[in-house]
Image (cartoon, rainbow over all chains, first blue to last red; front, side):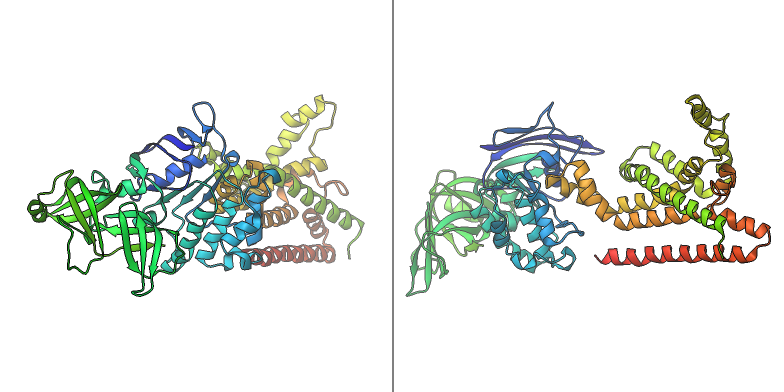
Length: 355
Length: 224
């Protein structure tokens, strides 16, 4: 089951010529700089951009092609705009029910109470949108979109208009959404940290064209793409809580390439977690180092080397099938005689749990 | 006090204004919606035509309407061929004249209110599964409520206050086409100042109350 989209939109001196296929599950981020056409692409998928020539197939159903154009109100999707855009003439409850009651009861797959609970908006139902905080409004908007039981949820930078506090308030809800509902999400963002935290897939958009798309771990570490360069270059690693060490107050996290040790996290065993490894925090050695304070050391194979700047290289490594980035100096690369296929040990100085 | 003729004029005036507003809402709402959404160049022409009664002397409008609606005019002539009466000097003629005369007072507030809504709420409603007509009535109309209130009151009050147009095409027939504003004029001509005072004072009070209602209600809607 996939989401398949091709769109051609020409508007003055801007052309969107986008083409991508992603799995119809989890969160797929449409990522790119401001003005690259992310929002236009999302609006085209919703049927809000006309005239848009294109092809759109969602999990086996064609919504748009050369002859057919399903108008927006007939596309089973939910749309969360950057500004919550709640109807000011309706209460929170009225807003939530607007889409819900237009759906025949047999088509309602998202339960009203479930959505309200999921987004924690029970106490707000009788309020007017004008009295809500930015974060509360956006949560209502997300619930309102969910209550149309969408087969695809579109989110256009839902956090961009919010302050840090509200962002922090909403992110956990987005993660729960991800875990509890099996609705595929297209999530437009220009914030790398949001993408690293939430996305399973990434579609990289540059000047109206899709530069590349694929699984998040793969995309963040592809040294032929700009994401894998710069100070914030990073890898994300899916791991599981394996063991707690009460003596030293530590938690062990298992991933296919080995075991991370981090300060004790209050998480149940088996819980999946996502880790972030900044390339600048990963160093390499030819032998397993002894007598070091670093706990997280794994064997890995060099995959590719790419120039970063005259002094530094970006190395992409394979640790048990998981791609990892390491930024080292050109001098170190020469001393270690790094080349593709070479076995090394990666030492991870810091690892951050996302979420 | 008011005599029978005055009461008849009052009744005709209220009926005329009420009917005019209803017709203008039916015609003006789709027109205003179209004007607020379209980007065609033709829009400017329509806007100019709608605004004409604002700048034209009412007698000019009345004159052309008289010509058009009279027995030799295109509309009046058509009515005659269909076996009817020409519309000049009838209540129906008054209504037609008033619709033209008060058109901008209904269309412009509505157009402004619709434009102020922007595209977003309608797009949101579309993504929530509402068809175009559905979202017009459940989103655009409620959000344009202050505009509707202004349109109704201005359309009504302006029709009550018209003089030139109704004089030209109504012909001032007591009990049939004589409205308040002309009745006042007649009283003054006949030096019946007492009558004129009652009618003029009544109109002044009515107009003030109507406008007051608009401003008070519009303020309340803004908060809601």
